[in-house]
Length: 339
Image (cartoon, rainbow, N blue to C red):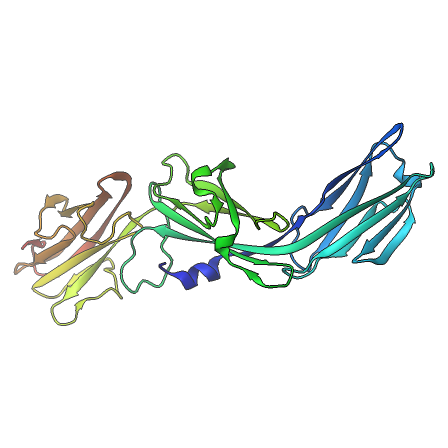
């Protein structure tokens, strides 16, 4: 995958914890006793302070003695102690919370909440063009494709790493399930073409193990950018110089200059691919050249100024378009003409 290192560095880590039991019911003859446990945040990170609150619409918990146990050890107790805060463990480390409630009516109730941290990162790669040795990240533009990869860190009861291909993935785009690309081992979501109507969208993945005892959710907001062009020169001795783009005003010192156009973030495999359309202009007049992303110009024997411009677009994705122009200064009187 292109720019894997950048992708991994760019992605934010999100560690989520999943309940083995969130909502519980307790029934006593003649009384329907429903007690639930509310967890904030719903998906806490590892080593994060997490708050659990006991809620009941049948029992007066304000007058009940409530005791909280962490991994079997009493951590807190008191009358009306409905809220308890604790710190979650590391990835793969299970923390078991047991809450014991004794009401004024003599009703004894216990609830258990077990959580095992798991981790997933989301890395994305735009299916757009950048020139060789480009140090930046390829960005996605309107109508371009994009690939999102989930990088999970799940552990089993023994602490052994669970391979990504053994997990279950549920993908969503703007909260809409992507059923065709979800399921067992489907850690990659590929969009061959993004919507022309949305410049921003949200991708979400819900990852769980096969037993559904460990679970994490990660979302990522993405925003498209605009493609653009840069123009370089081809030196007769060193060749194409991608290290320095043409800056205005360009000083026309040699008798002949070869300009080379490079698209950035277009849906094209190469700069000269048939999917790209280039239109060169000299002093506002459209001109033709043998190679469509290359323009060769030669100056005459007089001083003056001129303008070179370029308009480009992706033939099958017309919203991917841009234009650029720059002034040219000559040591002789007439502007450059097409070679």
